[in-house]
Amino acid sequence: MQMPKTEKPLSDTASKILDVAERMARQGGYYAFSFRDIASEIGIKSASIHYHFPTKEALGEALVTRYTDRFLGALGRLDEATPLESLEQYVAAYRRALIEQDLMCLCGMFGAEIARLPDPVARRTREFFERNLVWLETVFRAAGAPNPEARAGETIARLEGAMILARSMNDMDLFQRVTADLPAQVLRD
Amino acid sequence: MQMPKTEKPLSDTASKILDVAERMARQGGYYAFSFRDIASEIGIKSASIHYHFPTKEALGEALVTRYTDRFLGALGRLDEATPLESLEQYVAAYRRALIEQDLMCLCGMFGAEIARLPDPVARRTREFFERNLVWLETVFRAAGAPNPEARAGETIARLEGAMILARSMNDMDLFQRVTADLPAQVLRD
DNA sequence: GATTCCCTATCTACTGATAGGTAGATATAT
DNA sequence: ATATATCTACCTATCAGTAGATAGGGAATC
Image (cartoon, rainbow over all chains, first blue to last red):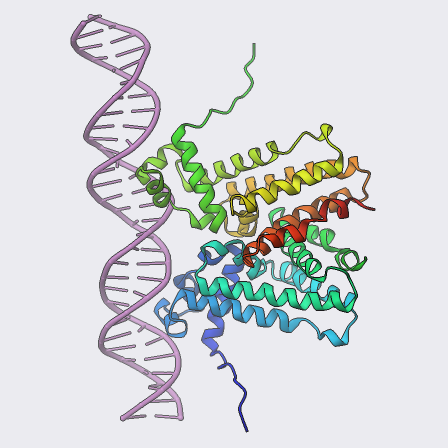
């Protein structure tokens, strides 16, 4: 029997490194996390991080990969919900990240910085958006909405932008007000 | 006769410093510009920058202040255009920044990083959004649109998000497709 | 007309902190 | 014995920032 290609599961330490790095990156971007800061927070030495992630570039790549998989994995299955429900779920995923964790979307952050990101990290960031666009286009196609590609883009743009705006204004409820009618509005013809 | 409070005009060198710093910041954020890089690009020594801007914080603040004034100054007068025209002008301002300069909006960038920005820079960034919200609310009120505050937020969110998305996908035309119907759409009841 | 003084703007030379990264020793567990 | 995971100790490069010298250009004084 052929084994499917499986990802090597992350060790405890590697997970902790990613957890801390992700939080720092989602607060201040790619240049806002350092090996030293991560290490001191989890109680190891910075050299030890290089054992798990040889370079910062590799760490950044792992960061985006894990984030993308988790983000898309947290979305419900498309064949078990109406398009409206799917969209509401999608908006809720962003809202949770913003309200519960008080953090930016990792890829919204990296997307803003993309011109100064190492190539592999930039590529993974693009993959995040690509896969999100595909997911949303499927929703809009199922709803029979015109221009599903443009609507998918509108949806992501408005959500990422609303996170930035709400955080900038230090008014998290602004996210709610800006995205409350998004699912219904973007679905109507 | 009482003199109105006037801003001291920037020297040639100070302007050049801001020009270079702005471009770097709009590519990679607050941590992506350094005194050394700026200095070497304009052919002076990094110590000379401190003469014009004592600290990086001060330089960041000057950056956002100039950007905000220019951005709002480039918008037409509200009493000389219909709400639809004003909105089209507003969208065009973002499009120009993205397409012609191939740069992010400075405050979209700083807004994403706001949790790790020095206080004065964060405050100026908030001011940018505050003043933009006011401008847009005026437009929506003049158009008799309901919820002008939410619509102003939606507009900014979608434009900032569309910039990030288009740059991430390396597809500048995506900005066009995502924002093409924005003025009409956000104005209809 | 020459001298003195001050202001502007830049320079050289430096500091202490921090960045990512490496070599090689060490400890533990299988 | 070997593989895993961590350590100490170090490297070079870069960071923002500082002290103090220097050069030039007025303007006032002699």
